[in-house]
View (cartoon, rainbow, N blue to C red):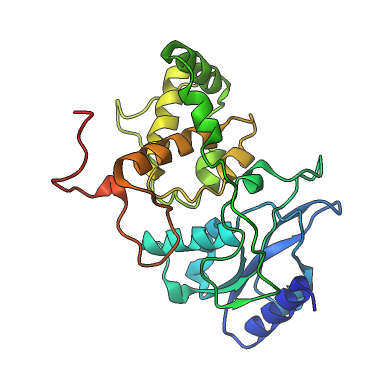
Length: 284
C-alpha cells in the first residue's frame, strides 16, 4: 500500500468514526503536475486526497483556520509538522486539536520545470518532527551542508553594495502580503500592517515602506521561523525572502548558540522574547 493509499484509508476512517471533523491534505489540480490544498469534512471525499512530488503547499496554516470546527486530521511532512509545533508553542492551537499522519518527504518539484523546489533543496528535515502515525517509510534524507550559503554571499558585500542590493529587492515588492498570509509563524490576530493608528505604518508602496514592512516581519518571526521557505515560494515577484530570514537566524546562532525553531513541543522560549543578565551586549 502506498503512502497515498494509506492517507486516503485513514482519512476515511477518522471521519467516519468521528475522531476528526475535518481532514486537510492535497488534491489534484487541473493538470497532473499540479495540486492544491484540500479540506474535507465528508468521508466520501477521501479518495480525492493525493500525496506526490507536486504537493508544494505547506499545510500548517490551514489548521489554524479550521480548528474551530473540531479536531483536525492532516498530513504532515517535516515542514508541515514544524509549522504545527509552532502553532502549538504559540498557543494558537492545542496538541489535542490535531491528529497528524506523517509522511517522509524527499522534496517536491516545480510543476513548470520539474526541478526540485529551492525550499526543498535547502530543507533540513524531510520527516515529521511529531506525528500520531506514519504513512509509508521515513525519507531519511541527508541535511544540506550549506544552510547559510546565500547569507555568506550577502555578508561579503560592502555596505553600499548591500544597501543597493536590498533596495532593488524592496523596489520590486508589491505589498500583497502573500509572505505573511502563507507563513505558519504569522499568527497575530491583527497584523501591524493592518493597524489604522496614525504614524504606525504607511500604506504607500515605496522602498522605504516596503523595507519597514519586510524588516519588521523578519524580526517578528526571527526566533520562530521554521525555514519552510513558503514565503519565498508564494512571493509573486520572486523576492529572495529566505536570504534575509536566514541572515537573522545566523546572527541569533552566533549570539546565543545553535538552535532550530519548532523542533519540539517543549522548546525554550524564543531568544528575542527573553532577557538574561549574561546576554551578549557587544553591540551596545
